[in-house]
Image (tube, rainbow, N blue to C red):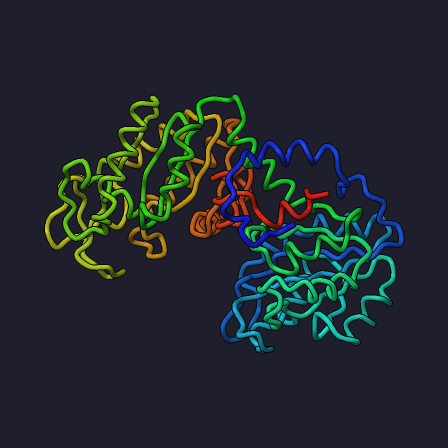
Length: 421
């Protein structure tokens, strides 16, 4: 199957996934006794710039249940992942050896490490694995053939396992050798890990559930980067909350004065079209009523609270205001399904994080009341982690770009490779 143009295909891929999942090998039903499971994980985790220690183990923790399933079922595990963006050569600060201690901590056992992902020494280590043992291969992106989707490279990687498990949702939208091409070498022994199963099922629950009301919270800097997902969501949601920098493009499109706030003049008409479409479909579109404005983009900036449509010249909106927080919170607490992608402001600066923090707590409170909440996108995930609320929402997606493309109905190469017979 040719995956080179897969990202351009848009179909009801969620429905195909659910249908195929009932008619294929699954990690829950497969017999791993005596088998080596080659698992593509997404251990692209942040490291301390000085010590190279893992500073956020979320993605490692997310893969543990899949790894333990294989080990507890009598198999052995070979893990492969990328880390960062090396220039196709070994770089010490991007070596996966740096994350071995964290994996051992989360897994509760010692693991082996191969200083390359291919080559005689790596193959010797994987071929001698005993049941219950784990081997981590070196950074896949130390080889340029990985990102090029090289078939020969994928075939070499396939030598490490008897069964292939893709549990790297964060890279499922890339047709790389280890995420997509490799699946052809396991025609009858390929499957998803628990993480990908949960990711897809969570998106399906948001988009295809009959529970109402469904509220989507979309933030971030630019309308241009979220047009497709917003348009897609308007066919599904009851309410759409707009926050972050993109809110000021909407405010200006409605005739407001937004001072020096971030706006995209080329997308004012697009914003108007989105508002018109929302109205025609009966979707409640919520724009921040008020704004925390600053006189400069700085943690030391002077601030004032003002109406979003009346921000003074020389001032810029960097967070939502008190009235917006109340309105958004009320909408969220009355929801049964919630999708959150994107912050409400520049939450990295403590002076401008109250809006994002309030939304995070509102989503957590709604979840406690029985709503299903899906949080995805790097900044949203960072926010729930910052406020220690990851465990208070239904699901935190590990793949921002992949989740957005999946929500848009784009067929993901890494998913299609497993579904393809």
